[in-house]
Length: 351
Image: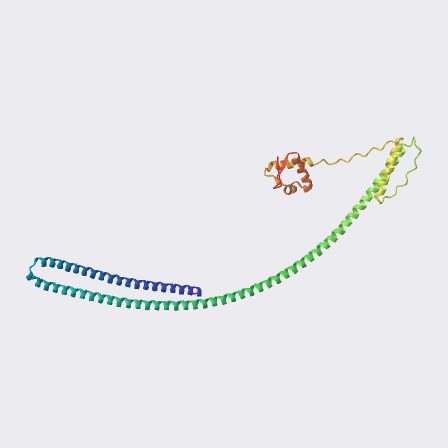
């Protein structure tokens, strides 16, 4: 049984003893009150009997007075004797009743005094026992609390030691993990560096090969352009002085050789035509169709499917547009009255 259960049992015993003492005191009070009630009832009965006797005596005296008035002078002496005897007898009865009342009162007083003394003695004894029990319980409780405090202190110290050891172990494990992670990252970085070097070397080799192939292709194209320009100049030579033979094609090593032959080719074309004509502008490069209208229709369709609306930050990733560009489109839609913007929530909805 633990100390807490022992303390609970001790407290329950003290409470039971206190309840028993309270019941004993209640029984003693009830007995004293019953004796007092019995004495009061007995005195009331004796007083009632005495009043009845006095009433009978008064009745007898009244009858005697009435008879005395009716009797003759000769019977008055006899009547006087009878009355004296009756008065003496009544006085004797009164004295006996008074003595009996005094005896009963003395006896009741003695009984009450004894009962009071016993009650006070028992009450003091019970209070002393209760005080002693309370002191003992307080001592036991203080000892229990001291022992519990010491146990808690020891447990707290053990827990602190365990936590300190666990923290040290975790710190060591974390340091080891960080060291392993650093080593792994360093090895990974070295491996990535090696792979990047190999990839760079392979890429450089591929670029060099592609560059060589491109140079050969450009050289062949330059040769073809020169032959074509020579043929065009030869076809137009009937009205023009003979053009000098084109120089022997040299191997082209740079892209600038090809681009430098293009103006010569254009000049040959103009010369072969026999007259100066304004150079026709190069055809304009076809521009990609504007996607603004498509994005605008997509935005309107999306807002029609979502009546609750959406914010700019939510629409930008959906349509893969930058926020400034999408903001301009939305402002155009707001200005045209097709879309409304809530100034508080910044939500765009279909008008």
